[in-house]
Image 1 (cartoon, rainbow, N blue to C red):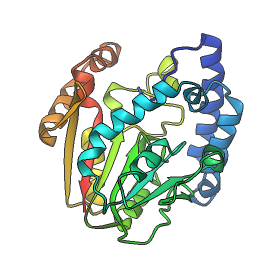
Image 2: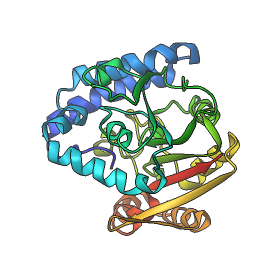
Image 3: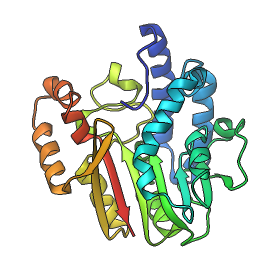
Amino acid sequence: MSHSYENRSLSELRQHYDVESRLARRLLAAQASERRQLYSSVYTELLQSVPLHPHHTRKADPAQSKQEIDDKMRFLGRFLTPTVTFLEVGAGNCQLALRVARLARKVFALEISEEVVKNVMPSENLEIVLSDGCTVPVPDGSIDLAYSYQVMEHIHPDDAAEQLRNVWKALRRGGRYICITPNRVSGPHDISQYFDVVSSGFHLREYSWAELANLLRAVGFEKVDSYVGFRKKYMKLPLRFLMFVEGVVALMPASMRRSFANKRPMRNLLFITAVGVK
């Protein structure tokens, strides 16, 4: 699951759900020209309206935050060198970007809301860049390694291809985009997991392995590698195998699919860590 919601009462979860689903419906219904302003404003309103949102509560637990960054770096480390220019899409509180900045030549931290990054103190080689949710305002061909962790599912379905295309343009030839996102087959994974059978919060669309790989190829990525984590180690597995697994699980009745899909090792196989190569 994408966030830790469990330490709240049902009424607190319901309040979060009511706010998030209302804002999500507003965003989904908006025209493309409206969404450029809405992405930032709805996320700002959500964070201001839900004081127990994980974005706030994670700050209160430095040990948990450090563990999450350590886990991400365990995979990222294989791609990082002192010459890499790194882009994090959806950088949040920039804790990962700041850690990567210790190892990389240059880091761009991309966010859509000033509210999220207002207290971040950039390092010398880290630059915060604000986006409207689709644009990637860095020089074309300047990025060696781009990364997003549970961002893709928050993008309006009509904007997904454009945003991916902009990431592709930002990459140099041979550059990689690591796109990590929860699998639709085992979802929903946003706050609506407690109330709905499909995502109806800020996970505007959750993807399967097959859907995301097809989208990455459609915008120009020449190859899509697929990784799966087991016991804090990652291995590359054939994409066709993972697509077959999720296809079988998707055939299960909804009443048993989610429970089965979220048990290990199935949860590990379904959770998407895709690496598009330009």
